[in-house]
Amino acid sequence: MTRHELAHPPAPVGGPPRHVPRPVPRAPRRSGRRPTAFLLVTAAVLLTAVFGVYPLLDRGDAPVVRAVDQVLDQARSGSGSTGVAGGDIPDGVATLDDDLPAITNLDADLTAAVREAAADAADDGIDFWVTSGWRSPAYQQRLLDQAVRQYGSLEVARERVSTPELSEHVSGKAVDIGPTEGAYWLIQHGAEYGLCQVYSNEIWHFELLTKPGGTCPALLENAGG
Ligand SMILES: [Zn+2]
Image (cartoon, rainbow, N blue to C red):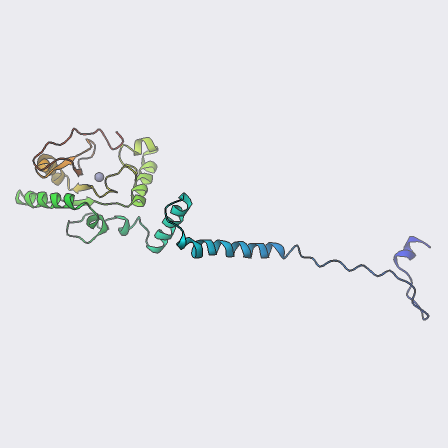
């Protein structure tokens, strides 16, 4: 019998069927279905972790929890914490009466001092306003990121923009004042209200650093110093 005949046995012609080995049925292929099931289970576990178990966790105990917290907060706040909710002043200038987070989140003592100074400046024929007030950490970080792109290095950027951890804007204890003549008025008279210029390269930035009528501390060279 040749190999050809073995591979193709002749069809039986009547009589008892000859024994023809039947092809062994192959096991059903499951390998294609397992990854799908695995992905579904993984997705279910992740969704449960984020939306089910997550609210039950003790907040703030692990960096990953804080990171998730931040992402969810930003998702909830729509425009995110770098917009008006994060301290942006849409028109570029604001008064102390504006209902903006940049103003309402300022330290109350600072607001009162600037308000009093602004009234007296107006009596001198000088109007000034707030160009930047309270900022969220995310907004401060965005300003720093922009400065890094503008000045080409973090080192130079830090001379002009502070980090979210260090900025007194984030703690609500700093205001930037404009226009220039208003800032100069406040440099000259601010100490009467406890308001001080802080950095020699920022004529617009003021903090409450002395008592009314006191003496302001010596200027720092810049925000990075
Ligand atoms: Zn400032």
